[in-house]
Length: 236
Length: 236
DNA sequence: TTACTTAGTGTAAAAAATACACACTATATT
DNA sequence: AATATAGTGTGTATTTTTTACACTAAGTAA
Image (tube, rainbow over the protein chains, first blue to last red):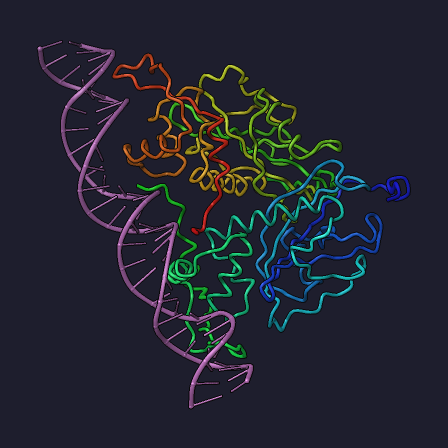
């Protein structure tokens, strides 16, 4: 790559948001990447992100970026870390705040096909296995986000955001297995999940499969909220 | 308070660090506050913090601020959240990155008496029970830091940073009780702590107490690192 | 010597986590 | 109609972890 520093204008301190947007589809965990069509890092893949505007809170900026790329609103986003190394951006000091989001890809009617933006040629849902080297320090940012959800899923049922509204226990288990990167025992997983008492069993079954159809479940937000209250305990 | 917005100059986007520096002394958990002697919020108590300089990473800025106030270096600091509401600073857009640190107050030879800085009249170790209303959104920042350590202490032995190098199990338990805000069972606490196998029992005993002296322990960093590796599990 | 104060210790019960294997059921195939 | 196929759905015994609970020992002060 050319020495961009000598060509591009320097700017003063600015801050940006970078979003790690996870999606789950057909058993695969994906992340939304954009292909940049502006310098620096033209033609590289990067996490979607943009500068925070003057009259916009960080949370709003993150929501805006998610909306522009996916058409989705009201998605839960979580700030996970802020990256402020001096030279992380070749054009000057850019401190970036990392947010992640988790959204369902399959059967989500509100989800726009990933669009072209003014700084990206295209946006693509990329399976984690196919992750290319990313622009800036986005490898580091992605890794931190992934560590965060892997950690969080172990004690909070955030995984539901990634599934269709109605899902089978096997689908849920696969998602856990993909995120935790290990096989789980079917009986123990079901026992534990159902014990949490945050799932609503539906009267419906899976359709269009060429084998015995599984029961469908729904995530029960009311009950979830109750579980969420429980504190981490240190015994008596 | 006067409408400072009309008097003070506005500045463009800047970022700062705010530090929540916890200390533990004589059974009390304290936080280092400064009394501001410049506008805005002149005469208010605030968390120590300062602008991030152009050629300084966030981590370095946090360490610098800690050093200026306490004389301590090489203390573990953890970034916990970034605050970016539009109007959190009356003079303009200031996004601030929160760091916390935990340091031992009793018997720490390197600890300077809290000094005067160029924007603070004094700095005072303030017991959490006596916490005044703080400048800017520092109440919110403090609360988030405290929630973070309360949560973290439940699964990581960060509490040692707050104790003198040699400590008794009772002191350790008291610290846990203060942070978690509940009484713990002595036998279960000891069993659990010793089971972690991160303490080194010393041949020494407490001195200068008017009752049976307790054994002293030391925190064993090597063993701690090993424990730290263990992942959160989701069963098989 | 006695009173006082904290240190230090063990066990039983309950709850949670783990390991493990086979029969059932819906569909597709012949 | 029979059979093959592929994933669904279920229970129990074992181990580990967490919890509840009360007394004796040791040192100091009077």
